[in-house]
Image (cartoon, rainbow, N blue to C red; front, side, top):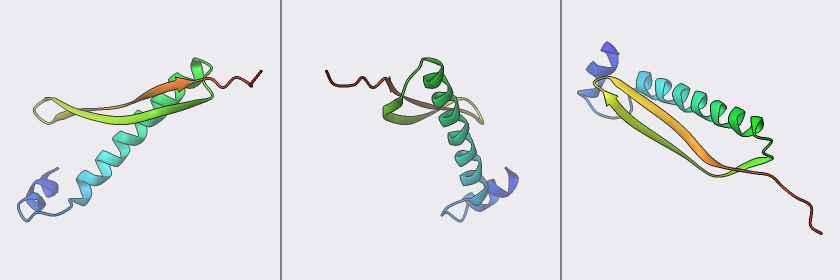
Length: 74
């Protein structure tokens, strides 16, 4: 975090922060997929990510969508 703070002064992508964000998005995605599978879903549509800083230095990353089940046509 300290190196990220120093690099933020110069601007541009901060590799350390990008890696943390990618990991958080991956965990959020995996959780969403597990919840959909537990419901018996065949897939997820309209998936989105959302991030909210809920206190200084702590951000919550959410991944959500609509779990769907496919039914054969009559």
